[in-house]
Image (cartoon, rainbow, N blue to C red):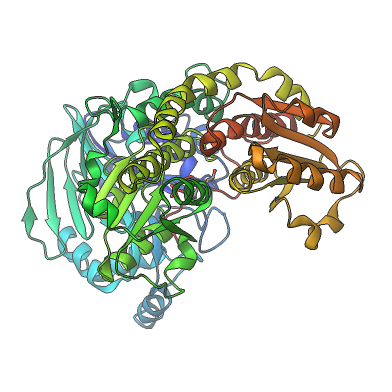
Length: 613
Ligand code: M6R
């Protein structure tokens, strides 16, 4: 949530900040603002409600804000509606200290009252403004001292960029529990919430740890603890493909990322230099566990949010089915507050694309605090979850920019399949033949996904018929229910059409009353043993007027007699069908959203990385 960019160096800062913010706009896009150190120890600033392009136009691409040091922000509103006054940067009264913030200051009411008693006036509804006034309260000419004093007083999460008018030759970056990196090239130093913002300028980045402060100057950076002690840090070289954060001719990032799924699956199966399938063996080196230790796992707790949670639901079916290890799946936002029972022999798996989701991170910390080992299945290298988990299994999907996840979700499924197969192998719960078949089928998935993607035209045509839909339902049994959850989320988040996913047998226990003439129901039916059961549920719905779209295996031609429209997926192992069934559902959502004229990559009210609870 919220994106921060800062620059100090030889170049003009404003165009670099705007360019960086454009790469971070997926993090929040209610409003944007910039503060640039001007001449005569003044800070120039501009803020604008709406998308970043409003700020770009207002400043002529940054030209009207000259200066070589500055900070910028794109906002996802938490405290106070999107408005000019609530937009960042926030200032002290004299506008000599500018702050941009990502996170939530939890004790801001207490601090605001404290400062008001000291004569400070507040003009916004944000929690951030308290930081600007607190800095003013403590600032006696030494920015580092003022910043660390503030850090000692505030509670909550923050990634900050701070600019002092009387110190135009330095910028400050501060972090606690919200993501922040800094980077450097020959011309200057950068602050950013995420790598894509500065990838164009530098690949040499430093991950700022919790409660650290960075002083950035034109040609160097210094790192400090909250107690002002200087610390040494090693840079990380980012080896992402430069095109990773560009659309490369695709109309949307979501479309590009859908098309990157075969590659994401391949890379997750066979990471470069460290393939996870070696001959007949599955090797997940990152687990760093012997077969005996793996056999000792009695229960897995999978904890995640949104689509990552849906991947976890699939994981439960696959791991329990193949390895006979009991799996509990929790929404991260519920897990930490329900006092979960974690027994000896349990292991916790957190799944996250961004590696920064606040609830997932909190679940990880809760599990560790109770003495349990946590495996993170994470996409963003070096993210908070990746750093705090005991073990990390990366999904090598590459940077994902569209708010609606596609390729990261597909890669998460693969990581879970590998884990299930590994456990099945050591637990001896599948025969040699079954195991060989699994190996063979998993390797075919990238090509099968590609085939489905290349066959998109009929899905686009079908989707165009549902641009005006009011409600859409997704149903399935077992593993097909897991994919229904994800299909439904994809549709609602990017097309704003109300949609629900139900276990196929459950609809008649109440929800069937919502079915009206021509209501679209997508029935996913990929489990041969359950074909007939799902058909019965389809018929119940058709009898009440529903239009039934079936997503099924290519050999299930019998379904044509019952369904109104059929989308086939290539034949694969029953445990892997989610990887194929999701493709037409993603395409369907994409084309409905496109047809409706929605902002596919940046749907309303959302943000890519949810760093608040
Ligand atoms: O970065 P994470 O995987 O932890 O994010 C979890 C959810 O916020 C995310 O999957 C969200 O539901 C997506 N918008 C779904 O497309």
